[in-house]
Length: 125
Image 1 (cartoon, rainbow, N blue to C red):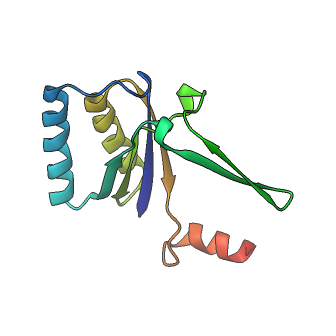
Image 2: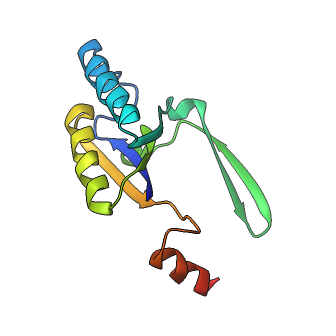
Image 3: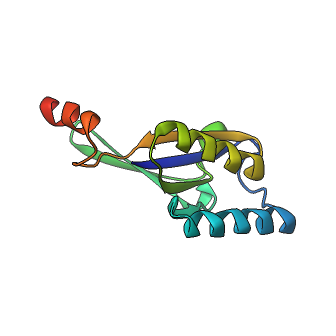
């Protein structure tokens, strides 16, 4: 099963990791790629460089950053592969021990051959 892990740091944006934190995270990421659990991962630049695009009543609005809600700022993401949601949770706990305080949201990725969950979604479509 594939999972998307979205990381929201408590310390907010603009606080770069230390060299030691970068080295520790680098080892963790390298090991995770080698064992096949990590498919892709990236950190996000500050919201000041971003934009939000919305569609409402057929009209688009674009709002340039920075964005006020610091607790909702995404610090980065990882696309992962595990045999179960519980394995993904345990991996995410290890990640948070390295990344520091914050929150990670796990979302299973829809895959047509993903089994019962995919069948439930296909029946609703």
